[in-house]
Image (cartoon, rainbow, N blue to C red; front, top):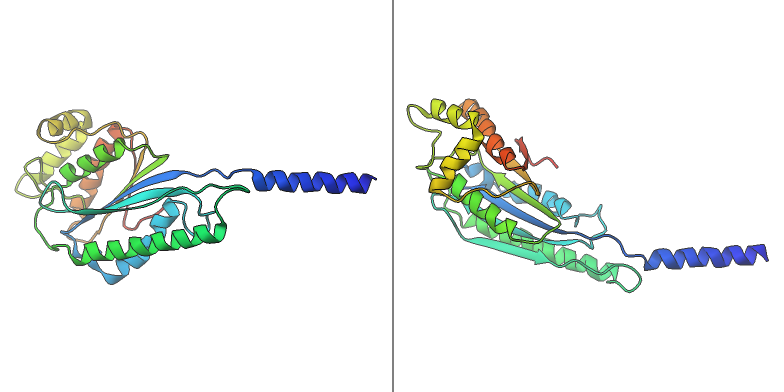
Length: 249
């Protein structure tokens, strides 16, 4: 009799477990690529970074694959805004009455394929090697758009040396170093000044921002100051900021 009750109890546990819904999240990712650095047009760039985007969205092989989200791909160039492409995949129902895992795997694979094709097309059609980048304008506009979106997690990924070259401020010219150091010293004042000539940065406490830079002996000093400035103003608004030479999750 005890064995019979044990079997029934085990079956009830299994049924309950199978009915229990897994926690799914909706993730928003925006990827910005600076066309002044031709390193990012390399054929291996998409292959190396695409799996990392899927991991952020909990859609890689190590995840259950039922989470959803959207990813926007766009360029940083000499204009404040540029053409972009957004690819979405809805979250899936889980539990006994949820979506079939095999069907969901096919959906994720289609999403991954569309993402790769879109990413490749944008890079192939980019006007590479331009001299000026309106980085602040582009970044602030995208953050404002993302701010209006209801997502569980929000990530901005920027592939750029972040060497702004616009009327707002510039890492070029005779007095660039003094200007940048002054801006980095007082991020609150800097944000006030930038807001007068461009979009004001919103509260970024829900954002994690990854900046992937290309360092070499020629730009190392500028890149170090760039990291100081951008980290100071983004963290001033509450963002979590990561500067690295690769996308490290």
